[in-house]
Image (cartoon, rainbow, N blue to C red; front, side):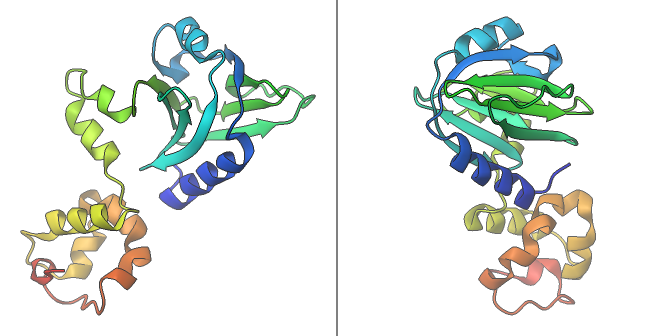
Length: 205
């Protein structure tokens, strides 16, 4: 599964490549890739004529913001990739969803293992998932972004508040801090001096 820096790179590359592009048609070749709306025919119909306004990232999902306010979320999972193919590029047998653009290019979602998922949501995407039974906690987890300094501080404080073992041990327990560990080094400059042998709950910053 790609880590946060890799997903960030994908989003930035797509911002340069497809921002402003208009989707003229959608070819869904693996139905289960489409998470919402169903069936895939509806997904394709709702995207025809949509303009991609900008591309961003939320946690490990790539977000394609459309001009009408809707958001298409792309979870790459293990082998997913978003590829901009120039006109005339040979077909890819592993392309699960193909977005045809008005200028003749294609935006292809390539996924060898078929674990990736794509959804089209009203007004921000992640909030809509909470409407489904049992999805609220998952939506909260997916919306928290450790790359944002504020979210990172809240995440680290919440996970270490009741832990008296050394900080280094707390960080190494990946099941507790998987997202925070992925960007901990990136955030050290915001923390000042860090003593890894002090209790995890001793830090107040």
